[in-house]
Amino acid sequence: MPPTERNHGRGILLHRSFGILLLATLLTLPLLAEPQDSSQTFVLFPRPLPSGTFNSSLGVSMTIIPRAIVQEGVLPLPMVDVRMRYGLTDHLFLSGQANLVYVTNQVSLGLGWSHSFGRLSFALEDKVGYWLGFAGFEGFDATAMGLTHYPSVTVGVAADNLYLSFRTEALFTISQHTYFGTASVGRINPKLAGFAFTLAAEQALWKDNYFMFGTRIQYALPMYQTWLAFSAFDRWLVFPEVFIGYEL
Image (cartoon, rainbow, N blue to C red):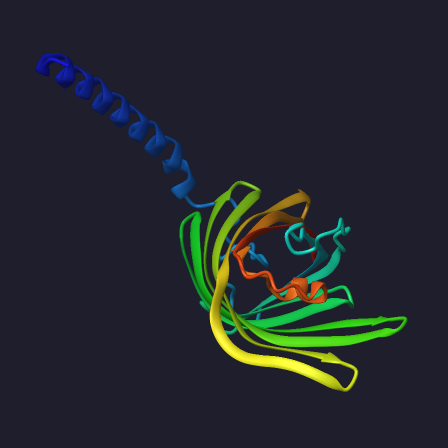
């Protein structure tokens, strides 16, 4: 291509890139203004909680296990999903979550720090989870348990009555033990097991009643949700999850 045509093409590309950047800036500026209700606090949205504030939610979640692990079609089981946040100071908070379905259950507790800039908020958080599973079928008795670790970063943006959050987590397994009657097998081997990305929304449907809903994509080695498959599969896979809840 002649130099004049190449330079002309570069000029058009730079002009279009500048236009896209300008449009994105104009669309973003309104989001940086103060939200209509800066006092509202949430369970997932990373806005700081006033000291002594307790927020909680109750809902359901469901994780899809890849066919590579469960070789046959297995219906995913909805789990009871309980979440909470408690403000220790105006920026420091405790967080907790419980996912319960008897066959596989996990309770996690963590400490976090959050801050806001107008409509934008972010939080740094570190959770430790304990999971426990039961499989007491006829002629079969197994129990499993383990420890997990979830450091994360959450960014949120408020837009009128819609509060969007995006969380990135690193997933670490610390230990796992499985018991078959009186026999047992286990290991203590802390290692990076994957990453998770959560996109969630909290929205007021009427008055001060807020609902949450979202999806969590886990790209990881088989985690505690798959213990009952007794799979030796050791490859990173995608585990989609959806959840919905009502903020109490």
